[in-house]
Length: 315
Image (cartoon, rainbow, N blue to C red; front, side, top):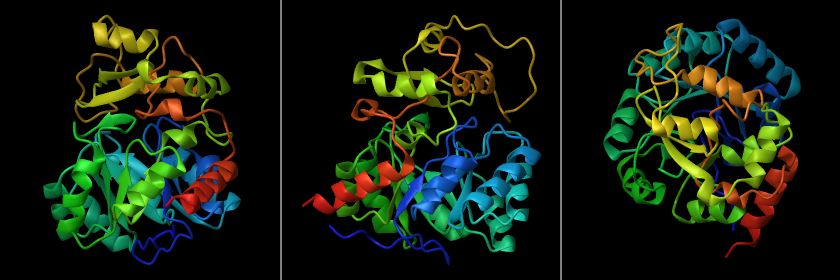
């Protein structure tokens, strides 16, 4: 099948695939640049970075690629506006935001002439986003990894969103292979966003043992946890995730107020940092629902070329 053309403001990626922004420091310059070099949209996860770290990652991505580079930032973090505005000053191509909703970000984007794309899970929020000036929306279903905004599958939400807005609608959640991609395009998606498949790539910034953990994980290993952010989250079962579910994780002894509102059942930044660094005992390893479809660690080039071949072969 033929790929649709994705248009986000003045941006025209060669292929309508966006790499999900995975924090903390999973999606950094190397991964984002690799995806951009293959014609997709590469995303740096700003959540958990300092402004200076974000500046350095954006500059590094620019050195590695001339393609489209964006950032993803969680509204739930205290440094949301600072990181958002830092990226705009650095000339980032677009900003994607989820885990909450900001009206102000659309005016910031408009002033900088930078497309702003919220992650939504309802028709109501998609319509509000369009009215406020969103360049596109990412509709994310319950199949996604990380923080979840809905208990509905993306294919239940997408058709109504597509029917009610005129801006591009990008589909996210549970998309791993070319068959998944082709199905979303057949439903009318303007683009797809994929996170977990790129987490298990050579260019991903997680430790090698975590990448192997992704490859070995099965459907039975997926768990839903309660995040301090105030949302449910999807993760791979390990000792830490089981302790979260049982309520036996020790609350943080110190807090740097990284979240606007925190349930303090555990420190999410510490847990995600542990995972990124390869601490399988004390790390929270976020993952999409269909992790078992990933059979090997591949380069971004191999992942995208395989996806495109599978999409082309789909009927």
